[in-house]
Image 1 (cartoon, rainbow, N blue to C red):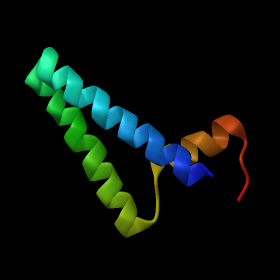
Image 2 (image 1 turned 135 degrees about the vertical axis):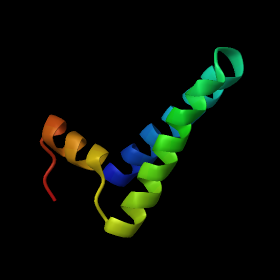
Image 3 (image 1 turned 90 degrees about the horizontal axis):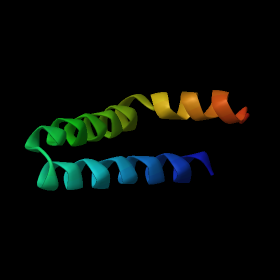
Image 4 (image 1 turned 30 degrees about the vertical axis):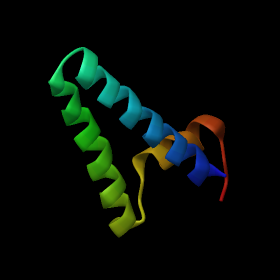
Length: 62
């Protein structure tokens, strides 16, 4: 369940930052890149900061 939430959050961040880059300022693409790098990093290390945050906020156990 938590993986679905993380994917939804990442997808939302990417869509919003691309829209902001198109309509506001291209510098928002840096945020898109940051999200992409975070996803790539988590695929190698099996650690995701957003997962830790969600587990603490919603008190989700393994």
